[in-house]
Image (cartoon, rainbow, N blue to C red; front, side, top):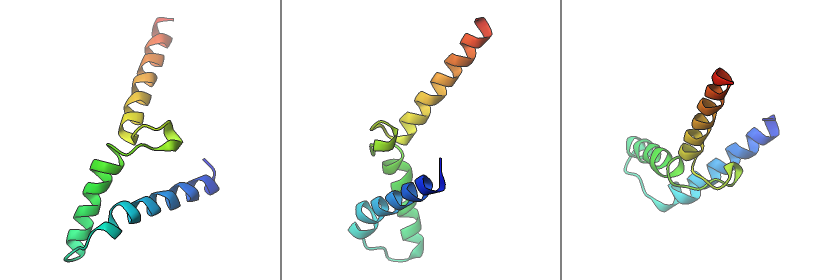
Length: 80
C-alpha cells in the first residue's frame, strides 16, 4: 500500500467517524467521547459497516475470510 493510498484510507475513516458518530452525538466529557467512539469503531465500523475497498464486507468478516484462505492454502501446501 502506498503512502497516498494510506492517507486516503485514513481520511475516509476520519470522515466516516465524524459523520456517523461524532456529529450525531453530544458527549458529557472526554472519557465518554473516548469510550463511545471506541464502541463505534469496534462494534459498528469493524463488525457491521460495509467497506468498498475490501469487497463490500465488514473488516472483521474480511479478516476471517482471509485467515480461512491462508489456512486452506497452507494445508494444500502440506498435502500437495
